[in-house]
Amino acid sequence: MPRISVLNMKGGVGKTTASIHIAAGLAGRGNRVLLIDADPQGNISHTLNLRHGTTLRELMLDEASIDEAVVRDVRENLDVIVSTTAAFSLERQLAGAMQRETIMSRRFNNLAEYDFVVVDTSPAMNLITFNALLFADAAVIPVSMDLMAVIGARQTLSGICEVRQLWPDRRLDILAVLPTLVNHSTNATRATLELLNSDPQFNSLVHPGGIRQCLDLTYAAAAHQTIWEYAPRSRAAEDFNTFVDFIEHSTRSETLVAYAKI
Ligand SMILES: Nc1ncnc2c1ncn2[C@@H]1O[C@H](COP(=O)(O)OP(=O)(O)OP(=O)(O)O)[C@@H](O)[C@H]1O
Ligand SMILES: [Mg+2]
Image 1: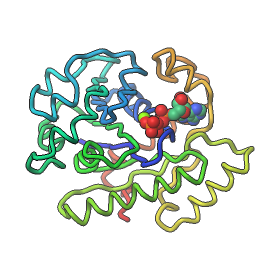
Image 2 (image 1 turned 90 degrees about the vertical axis):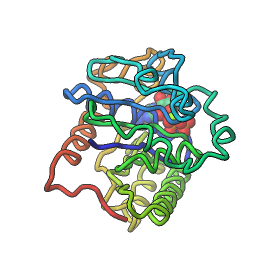
Image 3 (image 1 turned 30 degrees about the vertical axis):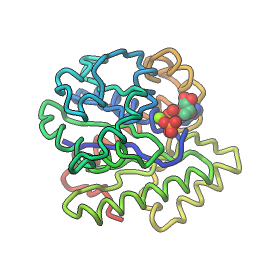
Image 4 (image 1 turned 60 degrees about the vertical axis):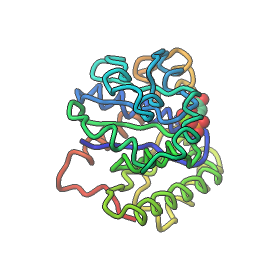
């Protein structure tokens, strides 16, 4: 079962938007999907309008079971574990815990009912993000069309390399670098795509096309809907469909080694 973390150390690049649409898109294709919010900002619950007393924080503190934390059937085939700002205190609360970086992996060691797990992360390389890195076997790195987002992606790669050095038995491959907020009529987009495509660490991983800039994504979030519910004929609906097809194909196919080692 592929476990996909969506990561970028830069804020506001489209991680939450990508996480929700990867998860909802895979669920819409008939896969059983668990979406985990590993960001104390709690943007998944805001976007999908979920309120649930038991969150990732209680799970990580071993105060609740997965069954208690899961919000079931948020959409057909889609379950969610939410976070709230209370998770900001996890770092301090788990300061003395043994092997605190692998809590998520150990707590989620039995998720057999799901075909995919998707984890949304925060832009900070904090304890929860580290847990998400060690839990995942594949990473998607959204990069919005500005230099700072590329720098954030490079910092994310460093974090992934660190994980590989410290825990060599863990598999964590880059599934895709996903250009977001793409607007081909701007110099910023052209320059950023050129930068990504000429970067030896990124160029083979950049998803062609990416997700074009589309205000409907913001309106959809405000309406607590996915883009396919809110504006099924929009550019973003089309682009996320293409990307979810890519994710499904590259994680399912035995022969296609789309997972790239860096
Ligand atoms: N392709 C797009 N076109 C237009 N707006 C977009 C696009 N993708 C995301 N957005 C908007 O950009 C904002 C930031 O997106 P999002 O919350 O997904 O970023 P994030 O990386 O999760 O941020 P954070 O680092 O704070 O968690 C949101 O308002 C979202 O609706
Ligand atoms: Mg976010």
